[in-house]
Length: 160
Image (tube, rainbow, N blue to C red):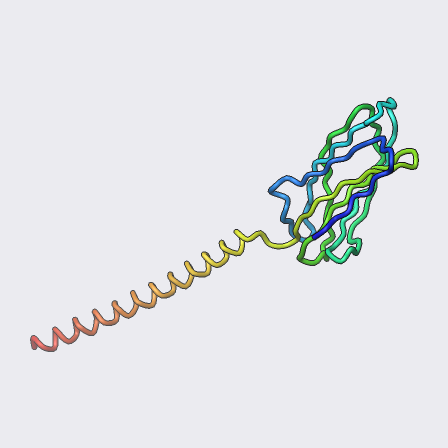
């Protein structure tokens, strides 16, 4: 998987994006959290920058887009919550952050996955195995009880 980052020749800003470990795998319709840090490299004072948030699938198709305007003096660091579409398919996706100011652009990107977390699958398998075990124990217990009744009946008849 390759992601490209776009930068102007003389960027005025730098941007960094990180997704916390617990959000690297998200369910469809879930919230994706991203830590965004933007640095003002030339210290132009307080300026309004446009920030584009784009999520693309592995084929480059845009599945989500939104944007904000943010006032930045030296730097800004914040957590952005993006609600994924309910109909987003399982797979790998790239989150692209693009900062625009004065016809100059910088960007950053990172990957995440939409799908069920592996440990949930393991939990489901363990629960199913436990249910099967309980059913098997119940069946064996019922058969043992039935067998004990037959033995008791046989012993009574044998004594008579």
